[in-house]
Image (cartoon, rainbow, N blue to C red; front, top):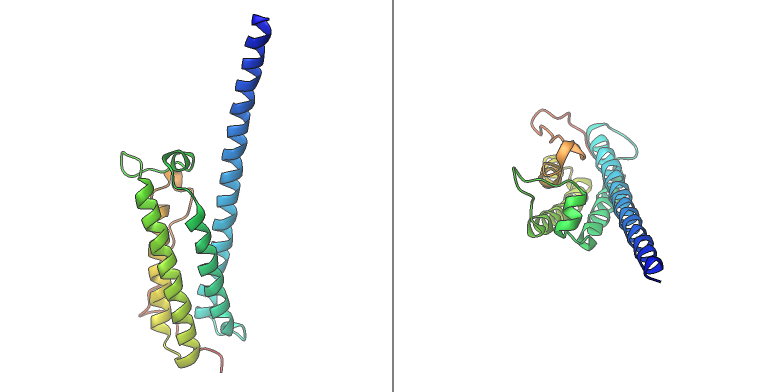
Length: 171
């Protein structure tokens, strides 16, 4: 009887380990999917603001998609365990949950500003405000990205607003 309890304990322990690994893997896949969606919309928005196109009026749709996707980070639980799974660092110590919640809130605010700036660009053609909003979003993204070991998330480039080719919204 004692052996069967020990065996049962071992089987349960192994099951818990595999369950935790599967959960970690699912978290990483979900996080990676969200990041891929964000990157696609940001890259498309940069393209639409730098290359004249009949699709340029879609800047608002892409900005809204970025804002909606950023909202997914509000529901991530930035616990020390989750941060550890994402290989988060801050110099020699791990970044705190509070820091990541602050980063997420700032990115969400900047994505909201991006939506407003994209609408403004379509209304009055003031592209520098749109590019500035995009740069502010990129900067807030990089706050998190620099916390990840081994550059798991790329550092995003900001736009040189003064030397960026002039593109007007579609008329």
